[in-house]
View 1 (cartoon, rainbow, N blue to C red):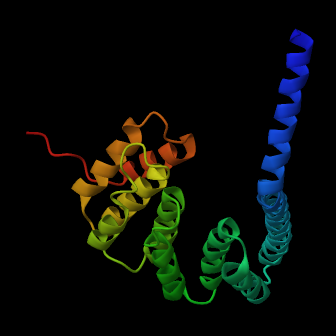
View 2: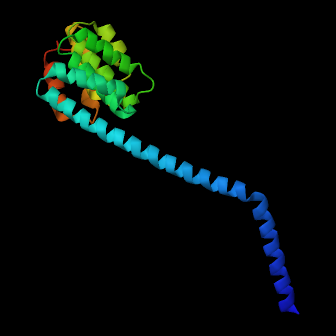
View 3: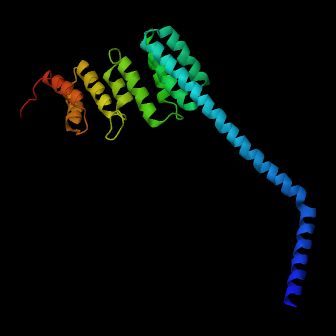
Length: 217
C-alpha cells in the first residue's frame, strides 16, 4: 500500500509541475534569456573596457616617448588627444603630462592647467596635490610668498603625500621674499620630519646656512 501511495504522490507532483510549466514556461524561458543576455553584455562591456585601457596605455607610452625625445609639439598633441578620449585614469595622467608639455612654451598657461586639475574634485587627492606642486614649481620665480603659501600650505601638512616638496618650495619662496622667520619655519619642519629624503634634507641645511643668525635674547 505504501508503494501505491508513493506512486500516486509522484504522479500528483508530476501533474502539478506540468501545470506550473504550462502556466509559467514563457516567463521562465524569458528570465533565462535575460540572465544570459545580461551576463553576455557584462562580459562584452568588460572586454571593450579592457581593450580601451590597453589601447590608451599604448598610446600613453608613445606620447611619453615623444616627450622624452624632446618632440614637445607632437607629445602635446598626443596627450591632448588622450586627455579628451582615454578612460578616466589615463585622462587624468594625460592632463598632467599635457600641462607639463605646455610649460615648455607657456609657463603661465601650464600653471593654469595644473590649477584646473587641482580644483577638479573628480581627480584623486594625490593627483590634486601633485598638480598644486607642479603649478607652484612653475610660478616660484614669479609669484609672491603669500600666494605660494595659499597654494601649498595644505599640501605641506603632516601626512600629505607631497609635503616634503611643498615645504621646500615654501622655504625657497619665503627666502626669496627675505622672510627669514618663515623660511626657518619651513626648514624646521623639513628637519624635524623623520621621513624627509636625505637629498632634500641636505638642500634645506644649505639654505639654512644662508640665513642670518637668530638674535640671542
